[in-house]
Image (cartoon, rainbow, N blue to C red; front, side, top):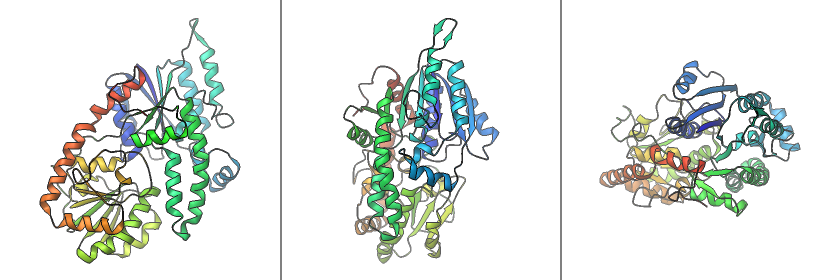
Length: 432
């Protein structure tokens, strides 16, 4: 098949959630089909990154990622009925590049990666007044090549999160703290706008993909006729394995959290963990040290730097030595959705995990079997302390975690589920 992927950022190097998912699905598909890529590229994108993708893609085209002024963003927040995410990647240049591609080449599948790219979906109507792509695409479809009508591609929308639910949860979390009420108000407005926008986008795609059963159910709650095929996030089992040596010099015992640290759910998770869980844990294990590993740390985390038992690394070349050095990997998420790649990476490396139920939502791992669940701060601290005192249990959980991801979350097992979306439904795939 001839497949065109539309991505919000260049999938290589695969350094965080969206790019990891896009890169691994792209590699799998390119091994079996002719795959082209049209992607936004951030400033500083290296030629060798594009060259790497050209090594297995039929074609790679990039458009500079747009930037929005604060004034422009405030204007659209106040005046537009569409959510902020619909405007985040506004780019006439991308519209033109897409129109050019679909006018000169035939594609069997047009796959749209994430809701930020939804305005570029042909014939959705959401582009009216934004990009005008819908009318352009219809002109393309009506045109002819050698006297034969062009066939519209199958439009697949890969909804990386149930975005309206993420904003709903963010609003509920921020309402608990008066200093976060402005953020709560923003999330409340975005939640209402996203409910309508996300529902309309999902309705107009030919096929709908979600990353977990929970996300598929959340989309069905918008419209019971929406049936999303679950194509979960996965992990590179060869790249993430228990034999990777830990980073030398880590304090003991080490607690590790990894993630992009300007992402609101990750910021909330670390602040809650540092403020509510660590003080309780330090009563039992005063030497426990938290490593927050990830690029672009928010200024909201700066006060934590005064505590010598917390290290905020910022960007690192490789997160794996930190994960390998974790006595316990922590997932204190209270906001968000989807299937978190960070969790799969830690499990693949055989780490013992303690997580909130939301932090591993949709994964299917068993409490006390492949990981440990703790919803409240006191329980979270208690479970970490118990694991730190029991090396044998940590090792057993790590072995079970590795076996769990080997069974279900390698990309070679996930790729066929996406291929089934393009043709007859796979009877083994989870749908909602």
